[in-house]
Length: 304
Image 1 (cartoon, one colour):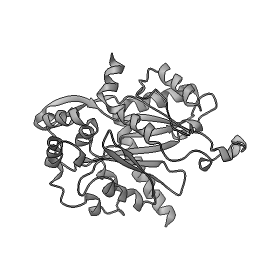
Image 2 (cartoon, rainbow, N blue to C red):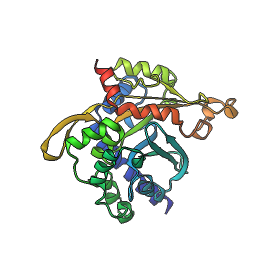
Image 3 (spheres, rainbow, N blue to C red):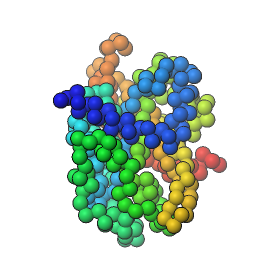
């Protein structure tokens, strides 16, 4: 039974990554560069630290809805995070089998927005009268997998998208992209020694012309110094809005994380260090800046 559930989880996670890689060209650029440098011998050598989703905190949606999928497949709910300035809440989730990536789910506190923004979001989400996850057949992994790219609400108009973007770029991203995978994360500390420090890996990224999110610095460091994160600036995708209007908007991006060994395990030989010996979880201050990988301010900086 345990093996069966893990096999089903593998299928769901793979179904998320495949369309994400097709849409985010930076993924191929990084993987090809890693192959050429000999960091990995094949794509499957990459360890995925975590994947992330964005949601809207409204009835029948948000964290309380989406998390049910991952809880069903064995994930356990961990720490809560709040982002006052961005009006977001978040939780992360871990699986008992440590081969699986962490999950990070955030949601927009819609009631904290202006009445104008709330009205726009309500226009698209009020038609959802019950939790859509409750209607999924978890035994049908094809159905679960397709849910993440299914249109939960109608395509937004360009006017509504741009109105939301003025107040909350997060809101605009979600109203168009829905539950599309926001990013996956390459585990840097699992790479060969010449590249297993984020400072060195970032030099490699720049050598292949990867644009990095520099909000809060190119490397975001946790207060304890044990979690370091960088991310690419989301590339633009051509989005078609209601009425056949089109605009290039921020898509998804790639994150890079280095988790250092916890002090109590510092004497362990390198060959014995496992995932459980390293810094776990997340850091709100780091994540706050990582969110900006899809913001116009980052895209404008990088193109200037």
